[in-house]
Image (cartoon, rainbow, N blue to C red; front, side, top):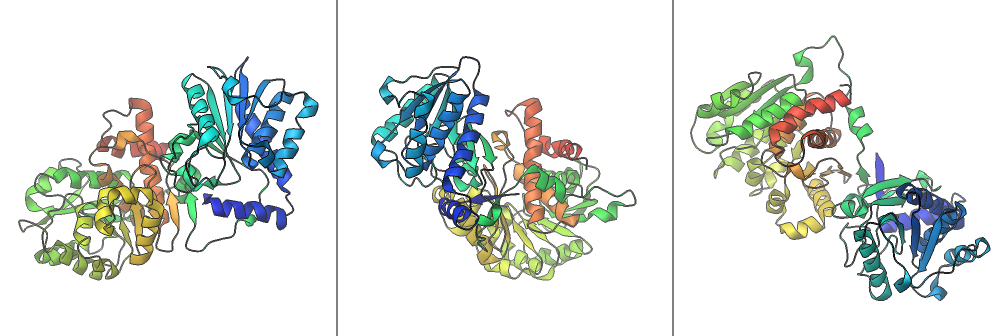
Length: 510
């Protein structure tokens, strides 16, 4: 699992690498430039020209080193230096002078340079730490790079596409869009959050010599990027001497008239997630409809009519006996007493519980019920539901997803799965995990219902939080990605993803 840093922590790690571990800044720059040149060569073809656009900071120094290595390789290199040469950092000055013995042409005026299809542009204008929109000749340089890419040139960015905010992933205007971003040492927050993740293109993290120990731990503030090996390793292969009781019994409290499909999809998610047994507690009139989707599911009729309320408490407590995990919310009939019911139920049930959909909308009216829970809680809101839980407008929430998710999880002592592009998993100890899987084809109804079932299944199989949460989110998104690779994004539906979980387990030999 990769640690993700803010700009401030990255600067501190750079300084510690030199002061505590003896890795001088010139050597780190040399290593970064070599990796950058290697990446640029990969994007090029026979006859490509390499346009290296450098700023005055150390990011520009990385570009100057890359220009040297490209030139030594016998490639055609055009160098563009943006900004006042007198303001180059000492390391960048040294690397500019180091080009002279190789006969590399002096930096060319920006207006005299063109890049076409087949050429490669190295964006070394800005690195980490940009906090305002580029202006003047820097904005002009970015506009040129955008035009060159539109004409067919490939762009490789040094550490971060110029114009992208390092910490938020939000682009300033203008901002480079890269085909490949080479990040040095560690992932940066803006590279792994949208829209920055898209603007980075392929993201490649390379080792330039900064030891992991150079990063000072921040308890309660760590951010990690989940990789496939992490999720695969969380699920142990099955022993041959096991049975259905070995893999958990999931109780899904879901569904109502007109929304039986929500209960069915959550149950299917639990089955495809590997649960040994799945029971759905729902209004009696929709039980048969739910069971019609999968004969493996068992039904628990709730005989009353109308919204879930306190009168349903005893039947639900009876249903929850000997269950290993509860999933509550998809398609439930919500009313004035639903939050009171949830408060009473959570205060008496000690197993892990996943709250989704209308269960979230119910607890949003009284968040104190979360503190009454005896068992571990996982909340799985989409941005609209998260806005109702926090009172933060969706637009503002989307600009500060990490902070909002972390604060909520810590305040209410829950694990929070904030769904969306680059779903976040925030644990109540302050750790946040970023999930890279999933795609726009998932923007359709029922995806969250399936996820809640998969998450319930993994909890029922004994995975602990937050591991169960980020593993479920990764596997669910990967199932969608594998289905899209075969069938395309358009028309992907939630039951496709439930079925596609089998492709994940096959890939992972589980």
